Length: 328
Image (tube, rainbow, N blue to C red; front, top):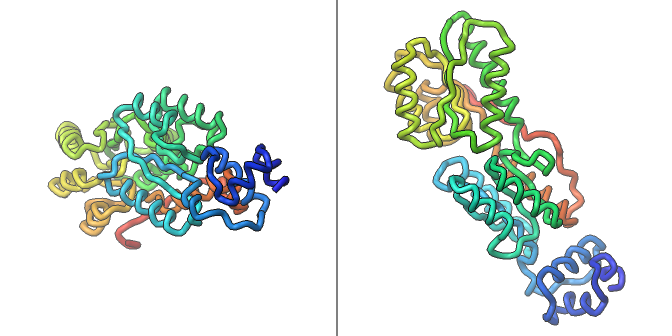
């Protein structure tokens, strides 16, 4: 008990109250004792009352989209396999209000032990992330990395953009024309990195293709359809489309109506919509960022930061998958 008390920075009387479930100890202190007990492998069964004591909060956005629904279910499955002392709680925040988003990060509704978050690239959000991390709470960014010094689990988005341009320019070699891109907005660092990679690859390789414009649709079906239809109408030279976001239903509808144009389409995330588009020959390539792997690795990283596991977590980017109609 003295070793546990020393590790937790509390008195032995406090340790005794915690391990024997006597109550009267603040939740923050109980957590410190629990983590010390785990780290030192103290052979004492913690009371059932401490079930879910370690609370890992996951903040996601847009639950209505297929991608975030897929990621949410991945965290749900992982939570079911963890020790009873650890809970993974998913919260959905409104991405269109970064000030409120930032406030919630810095002022959670209930106590959290660690934070996993899909964070918009906004100064207030980044400040809140840094504030939480500076107070000793492990913070892991997933999918996108607005605070570059904090841990990140996800794909190399710049490489994904370059890969999209590589496939598109190589597959359309000898066919002069224009490339355009659809993107959610400038709110997420991952989308900006993808567009930057796409543009940089084309700028660095001579060819017959002009990257003419990026259209911001905010992943809204109506916006996507109107922007793409207008672009195809105004520029008959468009032969390539890169969608840097993840919702593909409306894009597939437009390109199906104009199948005679033969637009080569590279997009992200393997959803039911993108599966159908690949099967129908409307979509050419899908780059999938494996949210299940991101969820697993981010939870492992937080548990390691809390001292609950000793497993080494790879610092390398998660590998994205290239899906075509031939390997569905």
